[in-house]
Length: 216
Image (cartoon, rainbow, N blue to C red; front, side, top):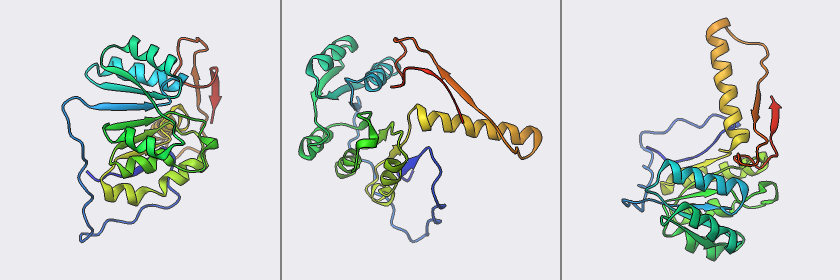
């Protein structure tokens, strides 16, 4: 399957159809029996929740908690068990970042805020080290910059997904499902409104927001 940078927001223009003579993308590297997943920003609310959810979903995964706060990182790794460990990483240090990605199969980038990121440093490092990539970006400018790496990621055989968080990732999937359902029942809808809510309970930390409702 071709690897590419995808986003949960629509592309500005449809991608051109692939030519039958086009060069096939490189095969993904780093196969192993027990996959290693690096959660960047793992000491934060979103990253910590992501690491915890992954640990519950796939107990066989080796989960690396990447961040700058050793005390918080080691505490979370201890909670998750012997399959987890803390790795001190500064995403602003390119050499440190690439070295950390050399021995992992997937990097989950939750180290926001993405509005402050002028460069897609983590995505660049992922492509360079042929590491699968996913982020929870919630900034449109960053997402367009990330999608500019589509061809480079495809050529290297690196699966990469951007804007896969609560917003606009999950909210856009919900909107698409709503549009699809409305079309099947009443033809083409003229206007739809969608609300989504999440708890204010501090124990439910799947969003960096304080919780509440939003509509689109």
